[in-house]
Length: 147
Image (cartoon, rainbow, N blue to C red):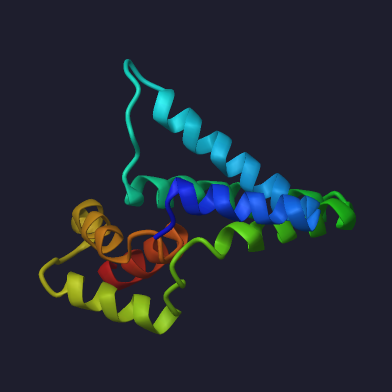
């Protein structure tokens, strides 16, 4: 899991290489981490899981921006967002395959029955996949299995 120091080190290397895409992406994630540390009533230090969550949110923001720019016919901006997403995704653990997600969902749902169990089942599955799977995919699988 990445630490703030590792991200800062990667930023320094990107600046030395004069890599504008990596520099921009890493600066934005460091700003997001700083914002997360200072938001709230008092300053706190983020854990590795919290940092991973912030990076995951930044990756998701870029994916949403890619879709919006592609829909608007701005392929140049979509490509820039994709490049930044790829830089940030390198700091996250590998995503689970659909088969792996299905296995986890089936395992968790063995103790649940029917649509009313959707909330608790989602909570348990999301705890097990911890940022390695998209919530929409997990939700679709859980909903399909429970109905």
